[in-house]
Image (cartoon, rainbow, N blue to C red):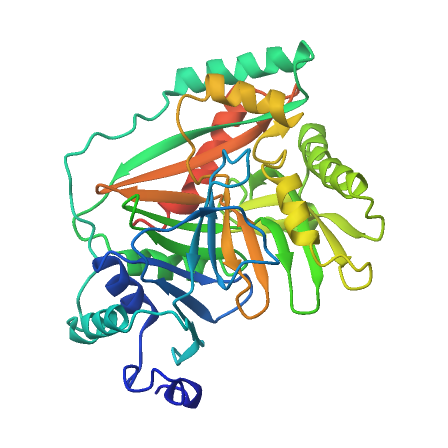
Length: 412
C-alpha cells in the first residue's frame, strides 16, 4: 500500500499504486535515465533518486550549496570539479515493508518524462528480470599475478628509499556474467549479507555503466543536527578462522604493519583538522570492526559543526581528505604519482566516493570500496591494499583476493 504522504503529493495522479524500488530503478535504466538506489548502514529503508536530464553535470561537491541528489566522484579528482551529480528529480523512500513515500519532486521536473517513466514502470511485466545485455566490446585485461607482485616489490623499495611512507596499490578481477544475471538479485544479496555497509546501485547512462557495492568506509557525513563524521579504516584480515568459524573481535590479533597502516590514516585526518584550525573533535578508537567476510581497524572522528560555527566543514574536509591515505598513500602526491606510473589501469570511480547529498537534510558520502563496475556483460571487481616497508607481496595479493570475495560471493 502506498503511504498517505505519497497520495497527497502533486504527483498523486501518476503514483497511484505501490512502487517497488528495484523495478523502479530498472525502469529508469531501461529508459536511459540516471538512477541511484541505496541503503544506509544499520538501516532497513531503501532510497531511490531518479534524474531525467539528458546528461549528468560534472561539478564540484559544494555540500552546503547543492540541491538534494547523489554524488559519484572518481579517484582522480585533483581539481575537485570532476564529480557526477544525480540531482533528485524524484526521490522515493521505501520502508522495510516496501511502502513507498515520494519525499521530493523537482519543481522543474519535465511532466512528459515523468509520465514516460511511470507508464514504463507500470507496464513492465511483474516478473521482468533486469538482465545484462551481452556485447563483444573489448574487456580491460586483469593485472597478472606476477606483475602485481613485481609492482608491490617496487613500492617497498621506493618506501625504503624514502620516496613515500605508504602507497595503496590495487588490481582488477573481471568476471563474464551469466546470461541469467539480474541486478535486483545482486542488490538484495548485498543488503542481506552486509547490514553494516553502505549498499548502492547506480546507473550512469552517459557512461553506460552500473556500479554496485557494499562499502564499510565513511568519508564525510553531516547529519540533521550538524554532527560531522569521518573514519580511519585500515588493516585487513579474514573474519573467519581456518575452519570457517567466525573470529571474535576481542580475539583479533593485529600485526605492527596493520596497526601502523591504520595509524597513518588517523594521523592524516588529524592533520587536516589542524590545517583548518579545528581542535574541538572527538576521537574514538581504534577498535576492531567486522565488514562482511573481513575485519578492519577503525577510529571514528566527530565534530559538532554548530558548536564551532563551521557549517561548511563537510565541504572543506571532503576536499582535504579525498583521496585519503587509505586509498592513495602518504604523502598523497608522491603516492599518487607511483600509482599512475605502476598500477596499469584507470580506477574510474573505484576508491572515489559516492552517496546522498542533502537528502533529508543529511549528507552521507562513502569511499567506493568493495565495488564492481558492470559494463558490456562484464563485472570488473576492484581490490587494493596499503603497502608499507613491512609489506610482503604474496600476503598483499591474498588480501586483494579476500576483498574481491565481497563481490564474488553475491554473483552466484
